[in-house]
Length: 312
Ligand code: UT7
Image 1 (cartoon, rainbow, N blue to C red):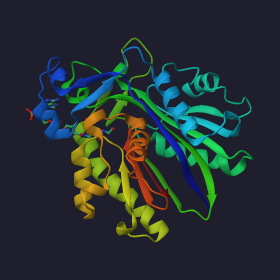
Image 2 (image 1 turned 180 degrees about the horizontal axis):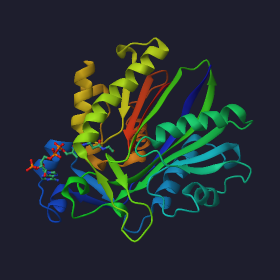
Image 3 (image 1 turned 180 degrees about the vertical axis):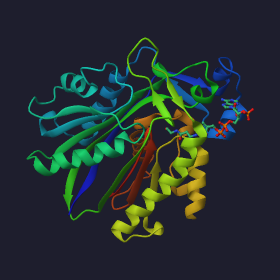
């Protein structure tokens, strides 16, 4: 089987850093509550940046680091719930800004916080049928734009940012993917365009219960499919929604927390961007080495879930 390989990564965060104390000046909350309930300490909010400008920076970084030229790409996919425009898509803006070729598909995907995982599998499909060697997948969000800063139950959780990967296929390389959805219109929703400001709404406890069930389910499915055990996985890279979700999952699976990469303390929940941002940080820190087995797992609005197991 031709496995999916991550050739290179990139990320972009807005310059403005917002602390928990800053949030406590907006709503009735505290650094103590946010830190203990979520693990989040700071997040970045766009000021001059836009979702598309973050996506562009992250994508450019990944292409440059991989030494990949635009004409070598077979697809450009952006996973997002917060594109700057309903149309054109952020992927088409990237095409223009990065001078990507015209004869490739460029489109956005909305699968909530699971978008990046879905996009990897879709990109693999394009790689399999294309003569070109690489695909570009970006997760990019500007959630501060749809945050209700009077709702303390959601506004302290989210942050803005973008992460990008350049992908290729490698013969006989490990690869497995699991994707799923459970139609649920209440757990997380964002209004569509209309007279109301499109705020994000979430039933936090409902999503929490879903997450601690969906994440182990994804992990077990991928392990069953590949015949691997938990001990074979070098890194688990989960969606960064809440430290307590990750700790709960690690405990349930009896895997040391240290094998679950965490960075929500710096960025909050950046939805579809959280996993590619984490991967880029891990590359920068020298945590990912050739041959390591990396399992990425996401969950979010839809409700949706997804996992990818690949070899670095
Ligand atoms: O990426 C999409 C996926 N999203 C998620 O994974 C989110 C999953 N859910 C969660 O992470 C957690 O449910 C939250 C962090 C959202 C909330 O934590 P919780 O422990 O489930 O709190 P809760 O909703 O049960 O609220 C407990 C209390 C309530 O007060 P009362 O009713 O007990 O008096 C809330 O009003 O905490 C209160 N509360 C706050 N207090 C201070 C809620 N938000 C805040 C806040 N500051 N920011």
